[in-house]
Image (cartoon, rainbow, N blue to C red; front, side, top):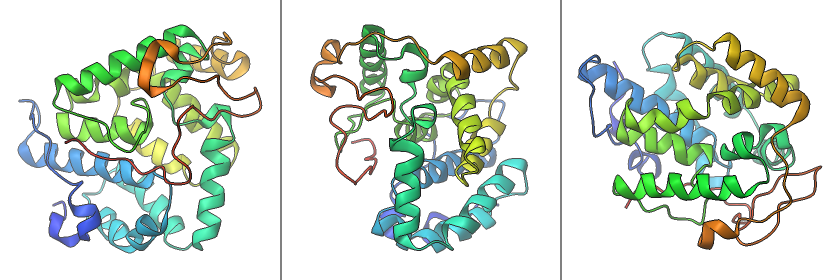
Length: 256
């Protein structure tokens, strides 16, 4: 049985709303548990600022209360590490893993489209999907940031809500591989997410291997087609820092 939202501090509790649609193949309890798991992943993949670090013990308790599953096992491995770190250590590690490494960036459309005009259109399409579901993204974050995509999946359900995750399955596999190669505890969060998705196909594995070797498509453009979400060039090849990234906050805002 999943923990009640009241077991989580107010700062986190408001983000643990149930999914708004429940497919017939899942029981209400299964949908609620899945929504909670996606919410926890969304939170734990955000920048570990003072607020999130303070909520760490409560998040770990919520994870421990999850029904036994491979997903829960991976989440427990991560929260055991997360709650044992000094804040400065976890902050540095997060920046190193997600802001300074192209192969483990959390911006999913990068893996499909690289630094091309098609990425701008993909971002626009994703933002339109959110607006159609009643969302407005706050905090200046791009709509393909994985914590944002996870939050949308948690609220909108395993069907349409998780469609963006399924679309970017190969990018998620690459992030997981890169985090594993770096021996980062964040690999457990990606592993947990992948347990919720259909098994990878041979085509998926081949595409991930090719992406790891060659990288995404490359075209030196900014995000002008996307309008307000970006109007600058991407970072040099050794780094990947999308435009308009908020300084040191990385906090994901929910729907409004």
